[in-house]
Image 1 (tube, rainbow, N blue to C red):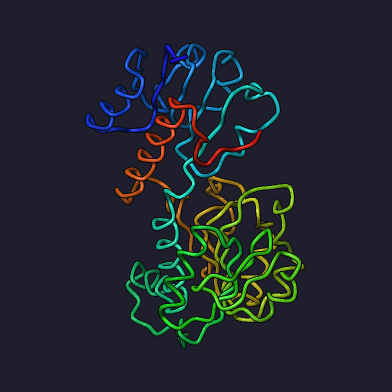
Image 2: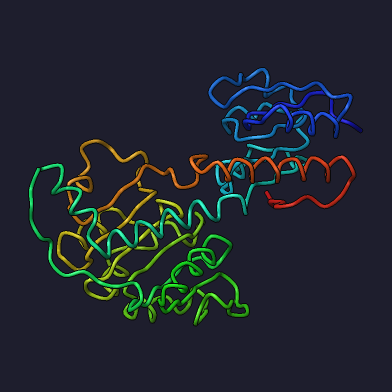
Length: 314
């Protein structure tokens, strides 16, 4: 049965809206935005396209399908948010290039100390910051060998880096990596890596994983980068590893807590390079195009009773 009310908070062009409306020709469409969508609109919707606030969805008894504009889905699978019959899909695959390139740029910046020279520029200080390293001589450990991790690996591998990947389940080592293991090998691999780059999602197994012990196992003078979820890291332990000199630097697009409080000591650590969780946004126009295309493909599949792309169990 065709849904009667569809709420869309994903930005779409008129052409994209027309494509969606052709899939559900008899439905009522409400195009709005995440900040402007109301609780009543969410309550009445049978289909929602985009990340409306999860606390609104608890009242959506008629909701049959929620498609997220994000790859992450943690708030929406909490107990009591969705009804058992509600389909949940996400936009995994839309952010590969944007997130991987952002974190890759941060890695190069750390290796060449560009973040320190930017600080010097702001102080109008003409000085040298010492020796740098080359990515072609680096061993990089990538945690999370999914689409984003493999995209990052391809960039680094092309410049001569030796890539070791870690994924949740065993599998064949992709061409962009030199070795591939599961999480059981993490502690053995940390001392070998010149840079550790995480794209891990949030889960019971990953929350607080990088604590004082794991940072202590990392190679002295190495780099830590996090483009996955901030709660992977015990932030105080990371601060200690940076302040002690154990780590040469850390690049973070995600933090714990988030947003990082104005008075947090991490802001003032020279080796910390922080961006405000923007690598996975729509700053790269291609990303929004990818999100909408996945959404429209899933709308077509829903209308035809086909298996949905990026179906999430809840």
